[in-house]
Length: 585
Image 1 (cartoon, rainbow, N blue to C red):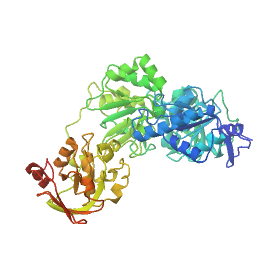
Image 2: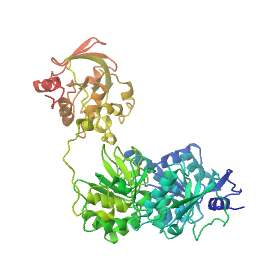
Image 3: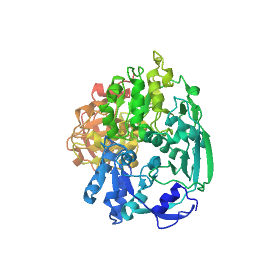
């Protein structure tokens, strides 16, 4: 048969022939789970009483959250670490970098090998002529337990890259040109092999850049023929052949929202930028770092901008340090992060705010992928040049003086909107939620993982979701309800959100035995009525109906027909309450 590369790899790892369209079992040489999805792989194995087929071929790579700074990620990472200790599995921990790069650089995956990972860009291994594919948790668990998974043998497209680009074009510009020609689904369901004089002369770093964006074309993988791996036969069978001419092309740019919406950079030049990001599995290699350092040396980031740089692996980070590149980055005003995926993972370096214009060397710019900003995709050289200039431009057109921002005011709607505008009542009635706990802190009330939320309307749903036994409180609470708690309620941090979340839900009053001092101030200043009664959790029962008069401090338990008195509002508290907050007029 006229076998192409993927057929040869599959047949060398299967007992079956790899005919296009056939479903066959394929042995997997390297099986990887990341911190994203890793805990679910462990769960699947444990729930089904499955053991590890070969620990020497099995790995964890913690690259999505290299700082371990997100508590959910940290919890998942620790689940994986414990499982790894029990099963003698190697962990490339949060200090190591991107897993797909590590397995290349550490020679764990070799040309002609197979690898699967919970990373959708595992097809980056096509850069060395290996087969890689991202998969879900159950597939990975199956491979860990049995050493193999099933595949449908895909048809193959042959990509012929014709000509040579201009001196300013990088591999990122070439892959953007390919993406423009092929489209977001041009490789959907296909493997591809890539050929041409330009391709043959690429470094491994350049090949990685192109291979990593097969996913953005819908492709299973882009395979680079390797001298140490498999090659297609001369008359190999391809579903189609596509010629792409890159002659004399210059720097390219993807417009926000769609990686395939590619234009020549001249069509967006002078567009002001707020920030830039250099890194990801597409452009975090040593070659990229050196190019950026060459452009940045002796220069500064434009005023009011932020350039974020994240090498793909710790080995590259250290090499940057040894070569003085980190010093150049820092003297230029850049922020340098720990090796890892960075902006592609939520909460990591590279996120954007409302209205922020960012230029990134990443592989994706989907709306909301890296926050609420508008993200342009470009090469590391273009990103660096643009951040020095203050606007989108190329490395040969950096001005002597950067462009400054004109003074603009932040719209009130971009920060947060007023929640209540009303004539507040001095008497209220509602049902009581009695929580017989002391020292309920602000993390129990409104956990710090939600602190980025600024819209009060959205805060309510997270109220008490870190308080054991009350995780469903927000779903069941009704407007006008009253909370009854023990001593030192609201101790801990100074976060205003621990008050605002109750305002969001429409909670009318909190009655406690005592309150944290900062929390008391925050509640009063935000016009959230709080009252103090000794031993109140033993006087009022859950779901009792209470009537409260703020002006006198009288509390009537209508369910029990009992009356209690708290201290009435002070004049200061009453004035703030009546105008609906300290800052209201």
